[in-house]
Image (tube, rainbow, N blue to C red):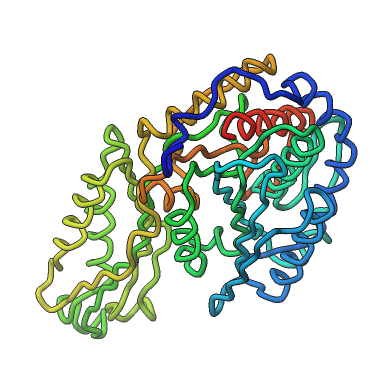
Length: 402
């Protein structure tokens, strides 16, 4: 297998031991344990902005992994300042192989400490709800049990280099260098166990790039009643900026711009001296990101007494639908067919750590995690029956990458 490519993975052939049907049966036998593991993981709160809880959460994750698939054969701890710790751990295959795969799993969630007190984990039939269940704690549970059933069956799989980071939900500012270094030095594809997309659990072969910018406007304060035409209103200027930015969207090209937060001014009777617009940009191609750079650079005040400054940057590069990604999806499609399942692929507006890997030329398959809905929402849930299916699918993909 060439570096960063899943193209030469085996197609429909089964391993000498552990057929697809046997692996599915083995996962079904683990269902109750998987549910218990998921509940325990959700009940270990890991908000992105609480480093103490993140450390405790990472310790929980490593204990769970050791109990499920065995300890890492190599482990590196990174502690970026102001962010949760990052662990890169190797899970060497018991059946010797030169094949490698990188697996990305963030362990932080958007939910604040104490959320469990008002929203405890609940199960209703095959539906399990709880903070972080769908995004993306179920994904890690599925990955671990997929590896466990393969190893128990003596089936082939690649060596896995697993990245566990605690800052994905706030942009991966601390972990990005670790992720990129891991991808660069590890030959093989990248599998991301973020939640799947839509009711049918589509896998993700493309994601938009994300830019986060603040537009700062400086005006000149004067008394609004005494000098209605004097000074320069930053509020007036920022309103014009918002219209210009929203007008720069091109939905047909996959580009959206959203000013989600506005702030400025001091009192109604003062022409505002300062205002800020917080902007979220999503693009589907690098040419569009360059166009938006031009739009931002070209913002000019209507009143020459005012000034405009743009801060921020592109948070994640575009993950385009490359031939590499599609070939990796075909591996998953073959594995699904062998299990009697159907998988589809899609492109989504949200970004993940997979964007960093794709920008380096890696073959990336994202969305291998939970089937459910409600990321970042109070109705977040996981379909436990589909969790069994997706664990077997992950096992099938890993086996074909050996």
